Image (tube, rainbow, N blue to C red; front, side, top):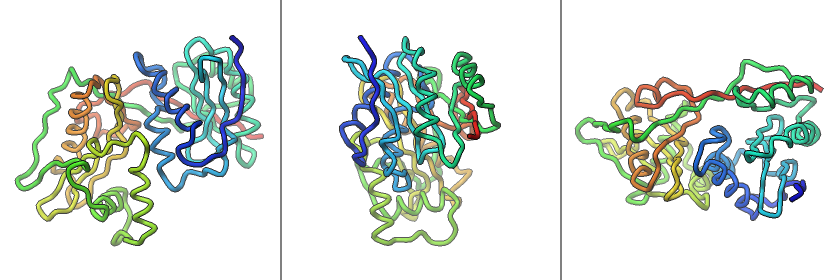
Length: 298
């Protein structure tokens, strides 16, 4: 069967092309972890955030066969950085995909491409095309459910909930605002509420997997967003935030491990997080081979 190319459509949010790519990203890791960096969860999460530039969606590229999608060249927040996902057996498309990315995904005379540190073939192609590795990388960590007790404890008066059980957008807004280092009181405007609720609106965002640790004062001390398709082997952690008022109390650990445990009961045997933070290693994650950004100036 011949492989044909076309651009991603320019329809914003959760379009048919969005869903097709999401299914491709899920299928490619269904039985084995071929691409740990650009996963279906990452794809859906970024489309759920207001700062993704959705005016340039058609600059992304799709390679298809009769049976479906076989390769993707995409950006995340905006063009300037390119990610490649290729179904096993279609590695011969790499040079074509890189050429496309240079034409369509560069920004202000520069393109950074994210390559797996173990993909020597793509690294050689990039080097021949004039790319040089940078000191920027994306780390991935994995949690093996079967090899860990997954236990946690919380101080007296703290409890764990999911957003399917109870949800308060102001408390969700506060834990993310404070947990990600913003100063002052979080805004509680209509625009801020829409932004937070859009972040939970993905078609496969499951409120029973959005975990919060509730402090005795009723505020959310920590939050962990989990992503999992029931019956599949991999689940994903994104995002995690702990209010500085409640750090070093085990709240973040509890939120993450509770989320993983819920996914494990649905069939997950491994959890992935796009991070190299010691926090994750200390609660049972281990590092996987990382990805490095290679850069070319035009």
